[in-house]
Length: 437
Image (cartoon, rainbow, N blue to C red; front, side):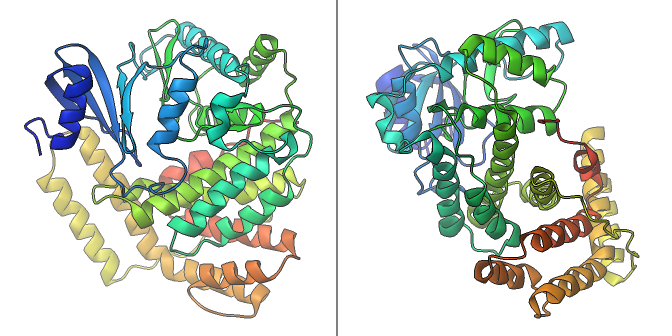
């Protein structure tokens, strides 16, 4: 390692193209890439490194793909950082001005920034899909747009995920069979639209960031990311329907809310597969708590969204399970107390310890009952009783193409019971989806 913490070969790469390094800080953001914030004798820059052990390592979603998009968009109206240089596993860019954080802004300023973001997204969607983007493997037709991206993530599920997920198995088939056939154009999709993935100066967007999910597809795909990642999972970023109107006026393209509803489920599927792949392939400092919680969340709201899309009523689910105290729960309480006492630096850290302790304690108390309920429910459908009910149901789904409604209801019920221990997830689970009728 070099003196700045950067591997020696990366330091040499940076200094060859940007000058001697005078400051170096590793960013906390990012699950699949390592991001370094650098100051050199010539400029301020950002280095993104693929360590080879992230959730999408060894897939088409690599840094070479990302670098090629920066090159392709360099002479367009789309606001992006300037690419300085790249290798197969690293890209070096000028640091964009501004901040990725909307916190502290007045609502009027947030609306202005988000309006600028919609305009920038519209600029992207009007870039011609020509030879510059052939390396993205564009779908053969607009009708194939949805399936091509689902197939990409299905391949990642197969190649990068070891654990069983009945929901991921079912959702792959459901998304392929429900893919809209009426997309009227192909555009360059950013693939990860929402706050945190752009920089702003308090008035307008200065750069769109994080292009690792870029692909050619239906523009409703990106609008679905805004609907879910921005408004449902986050919130506080203005009026979604006004933003749709602004995008439509800027592009001249019609908005299709039904297609947005479909792609919103694709976004959840990508999150689910990404989390599963991160847990099975993540680096040693991976925040497993976050990914486990996101999987628990997806296991409820994805079946909910699919049933809503199909016009199916949600089943009533008994989640008022009886917690049971035992030796395990007593030890968890003792460990939580120990951590709180020995790590009292800030209120925020104490709050996180309390939240994690409560959640783990709730899970330990409820887990035997949850497993019994879920295993019995799966056995009623499949005829096979096993506490590894995820594997049982995934195998059954693979071999059976009928009873789709029954499977959806079962996935929702099992997911709801598992989420009954995750106290912090309740607000997102209970939050209604934005209406896309």
